[in-house]
Structures are given as structure tokens and as C-alpha cells.
Length: 376
Image (tube, rainbow, N blue to C red):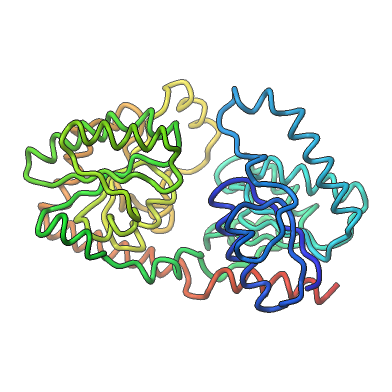
């Protein structure tokens, strides 16, 4: 590998970019890796020609006025890639932008390798984008085995060995600071999310849940997610603290490991809870109209990855009107008070954990990109 362009557009993508770049430079220390990156990518040895903040947009009202700027960004990036002609272009997540960029590059005559690292969730919705993946990308590197199998069955060149969280979570331990604060308390971790939408639509629900849990003798602890803006962090800290609930501002993973169970907003946190073998009640609240539209567009029965991996509801999923404090507390009690349910759930979590693979995912990504470059 001599020259690689890498692009990401959000915090999670930048984490994956950093992991990929680190391993790629171990294989080829003299390689030049550059592109649209964040702090993780730069610390790993990449060169940020653009900041990933350029694509950090949330919500329709933010996206619409930004369209002209995004199109200019796409033109500028594609021109630079065509001028440099790197050996490979690695596009991480952000499918709407990156599928458009890949198409532009192919139309402009770029003949190098294009890799989709964390391809779009065509198995869940907008399956027509499979055509883009077949046409414009040399290889896709998904996160999960079921994604890999879906892509293969649809003619996409997909390769998979494991999920990156498998290695990341191996070193998680309950810190001494947690033991000192909570001692022998029966802690329940409450995870209100890491985005403005999450906090807006879920914090009140979790505060109500905490009230019930406290009455039942548990110690509810609110996580202030890493990456939360200062204003949102203050809101979680202030509202939970003013109600007399504990707040945890260190690693959310450590909080979950130290807890007996978890309740929180659907997302990567459910995969982390699964790898830590912690039961979780998954919630997601949204406007009824949005939910009705999504139900027509999305072709999956479950919203949490652990349930997709096992094909059953290991984690209760409470959506919209079902996501109430009473329902959340009831699901937690059903797990915590029944040893048989706990054994069955723990066995299912172990099954789901095995389906995540064992190999170092970032190393596999770098080896794959190096291999396809070598064949060109």
C-alpha cells in the first residue's frame, strides 16, 4: 500500500478510521493515508485534508440548507482523488454521501479500488442500493455476519471475520472508583443516548423509570455519554442530579459492567451490553407518523442487533407508546427476579456473542485492502 484515501463523517466512523489506519500503517509503514478524518484518524497517522465535521449533520432542517455545500465538498474531494490517483479509496459509513462519491469517481474514470467499510444497511431498508455496491465497490467490509451473508446472497463482494467491538470490549473492567461510589448497591445503568434527539425523546422516560427503580430498592445511575455536547451533558447531569439520582461520567461500558442490568436508547450500546453479558431493555421513542412511515420502509422484525443475531427477543424492545417507565421497570423486574429467565437470557447472550467472531477486525480490514491493492 502506497497511497490510500480514507473518508468518514461522524464520531463512530472516525473511530473505525483510526483503527483501520493504525493497522494499515503496521502493514505498510511508509504508506500515505489521507482524506476526510477526525481526531482518531489523525492520531493513528492519517492526514486530514478535510475534517469529518463537514458531514456531521442531524435532521432534515440541518441537511436541506447544507445540500449546496455538501455537493461542493463532493466535487472538491473527487477532483483531488482523481488528481492524486490513490491505490484505494476507503469510504466509512455515511452511505448517502459516500455512495454518491463512489459513483462520481467511477464516472470520472477512477480505476483504483473502492472499499465500503461499514456499508449501508441494505438488509434493513433501501435494498435498491445493493446495485450501487455491486457496481461501484470492489469489496464491502460489514460489521456483522448476517450483513455479510445478505450481501453475498445479492452478488456483492463482501468479506467478514469479526466485529471491532469484540477486541475493544475485552479490556473493560469495573473501576475502583465505581466500587467506592456504589459499594454493594444494586445498580441499574440508564443510558439516555449520545445525540440531541435521544436526550429530547428519552430522558423524561428514563427519569420516570429511575423513580420506580429507586422505590424498589435499586440504585439507578445515569450515564453521561462520551461525545455529548456540553449543553446536553449539563442537561442530563442537572436533571438527574436535581432528582437525587447518581450520574456516571466515566466510561459507559464500565457502568454497564458494574450494573445488574441496563435500560437505554437503541444503538451500539445494546451490542456493548451484549458483549458484557448484561441484560438490557431497549427503548426508542419517536413521533407516531415517523414510526408509521418507518414500519413501511424497514424490513426487519427487531431494532436491536442482539435480537437480530439470535432471531428472538433476548432484549425487550419498547417502541413509541410502549416505552413507558412502568413497562421498562416491569421488564427489568422480570429478568432480575426470575433465576430461570436470567439463565435463559445469559445463554442467549453467549450465543449472540459467539456470532460476533474472534479475529481482530481492524487488522482484517487492513489485510483485505492490502490484498486487493496487491492484485491490481
